[in-house]
Amino acid sequence: MRIRKIRIISNNICYGPEPSPKDEVEQHLTISSKGRVWFTGYNYADGFGKYKIGRKQQFSIEKKIVDEIFNLFSQYYERNQLLCYATDIGIWKMEITDIENKKYTFKGSLCGAVSVGDTDLTDYIREQIPIDDLFIFDNISVDKDEK
Image (cartoon, rainbow, N blue to C red; front, side, top):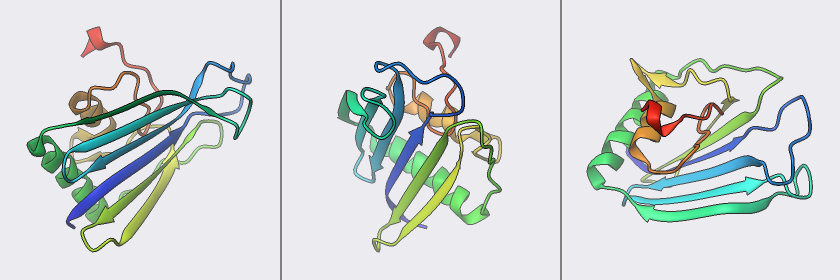
């Protein structure tokens, strides 16, 4: 599959205490084949579904990195991976758009385990894209000193 764009929406709302208005509860990450990256983090603000932008970034990454990311996601698509589903954690939705503008949608719970071979896609994206506290396919915060 030749990918033109990947868009991942991660929402960490789950059962439990209601988030505070300043808590980041949803993230949108888009990566284009030209290396453009768009990120928006939404705070709980006025309640469920009434989120407000807490942070926003736009930048470019190297074409080599984009090609590596897209190659991994193409392999993910081709292997039709089993997904983790749970009802007590957040969710993610990913849309892959190919060069013919056909869209492929995947969904799962924020429990991780989205990988290609030995490569965890969440960890890989966190290593390649310089945005703090990305949820991607899990919502585990990673301390930069641990990397």
